[in-house]
Length: 428
Ligand code: SDX
Image (cartoon, rainbow, N blue to C red; front, side):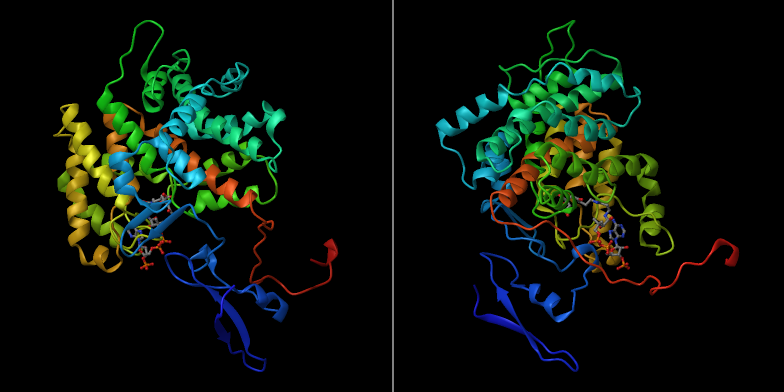
């Protein structure tokens, strides 16, 4: 508990003492739970100033552009770690030993295949269905296949569900892509690394022996890692809220996928590429920057700004470096979209509007350029984000379920009509 307190002085009422708690890092929080007993609610649309929970998983310092997973800075993890090791870190809070890592990687590999009945779900979609629509459906449907391990109070069931989700997201994502192309689904291969296996299932076909470029596999793994978790963002909060009702983990992750789809959140990477395509040429940038600054124009520079980062998103820095590496590897250094992106970034970092509003490039600004260079269609970009974010979602779900928690149930400031009697039809 805490000996620090805030005193809320209310006109005509006794002052209320509210406990203040301090975390390891970051701002103190004021526990306002006593307000309900005083007939009061807090009011914080968009939860801008609300800490919804305690968590040990990830810390963000938006002012300094710091992102830590289990205390480890994201740039160090991007440099030295890999996606599956980061999955372990998010769940256990510690980096795995050599043996733990080897056994986890093998366990994930052994769960990459999906029940063959799953292929039937895809047949029900139009070939041009948005892959995020497909992912919302098929990930939620996974719960139809695992009745033997859906007791969320059982830590072993929570663990196997997490492994199944981390293992099967690449398979389902690649199936969604293959379905759109009319090509046959590719089975996962247990002899390939995680990202290599994903690219194999995406771009391989039964008629030839497809060799995955190690540079592209490393870049893909880094993109997954950079998306792995980001504390209480909109989709993770959705997963926590769904999980607080006792819903099964597959349904909760499906809810997270739905929330991520929006262009203000994970859908921004797809929107960035659409925006760069619409701008078309460096010579048009000034017109679009002017539109982004115009209050009467709903246009926003996609890939810029962030609820928490009021500095460079540290993931964007790593992403930009990876973009340079991948484009150089592919001989695409002169990619016109990259030229527009770099010029846009430079203008935004010099323009008073963006400086004053602290609008920096975020994780979505460069990721799309890398994904496009790898050959992934724009419509699949948010699916890649969902695949990368799965370990974060499921770690937060596990953290909540494995501790005492209440069902999430916010209140409101009611501004509708006061009580009134029903008016008969002939009186209206
Ligand atoms: C992600 O929460 C997370 O952690 C998310 C994420 C994760 O890993 O989970 O980091 C992933 O979602 C990254 C963000 C991706 N979204 C985009 O790139 C879409 C473009 N960005 C904006 O829509 C916006 O910046 C948000 C939604 C990201 C953040 O919005 P906020 O915090 O609610 O801020 P706001 O909308 O109140 O904007 C503050 C001001 C406004 O101007 P004023 O009303 O104060 O005059 O900045 C302006 C906005 O108009 N502004 C922009 C802008 N973003 C904000 N103006 C032009 N272009 C932009 N991109």
